[in-house]
Image (tube, rainbow, N blue to C red; front, side, top):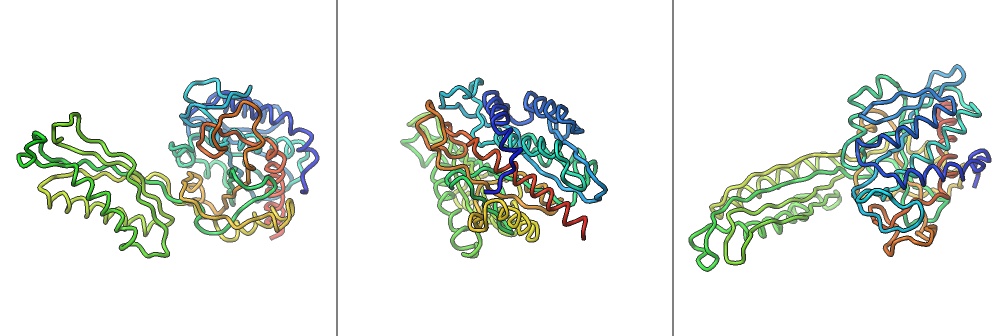
Length: 399
């Protein structure tokens, strides 16, 4: 691997920062300590910064030379409301909060790149270092954009990166087109009529109505959606009743819908509401149908994805840059890609063997209480950020 020596030299120091962040996780829009730490390091390295976008966001501004082009590099900062199982020394000190998705590592990789870029100034143009809050369900990217991210810091393209457990360290994945799904939630309340369970003919039972809906929704996937299009409907919660001998007067269904296109999403939402209202009517029940769209699909620009792939190949070799298999997970970097061209890639986090003694018994997967970021990724991820920014600005300044 073609890793920058200066990044390797500082890797242990940056890893200690990462572990400090891991030990002090902060949930969405509460990343005050993390933002302070980021701002402190950027200031120490002579990097201008702006704070407060999206509540706790930090943007570092690096300018050098006479180039007019600019690029944004983004890392997310927030943790998850999960109780950590790990017992190693840098495990979470805050009950019910944990860096179970590696955002601590994302911050560390971008900080390592920032340190190199600030020291060596081996680029021509402007680099914006975006430390974003509230990726986990808060739409922090959307909020930063609302607060003027791209107006205050006009950038020609924006790039993001996420660690991906399972693959060997030293490998990346990036591809054009949809790489992560839209995230949406639904809540359906079926209104029936309560009765004694021994005399159900005196009421309107919402429970069998709910059972029919769960089954009927799957026909949207198998019979309304084209087989080549991707879509998921998962009913994940059913709530009804308080006693075994009472037919409840209502039943509530909740769950999630994931798609790679807005066209499929529109169809699913429309058909779910139609089925809900007509099935309820067939049983003399009424209903309330709520459908909330959270994150849009994450869609990589073709030219920027290829550009990122080419940069990765110079670092780890073309054979170690994989096709990015789309996942039904969601990511609010999608909002940035709606506003600017760019690409979102995966950097493989290993098989979990990097964890120290005292890790939990579960797998080292994302959103798992036994997860930990692999510090071996810090030099590699930082090198990618540096080389990507240099190449992007260098190519554009010649264009």
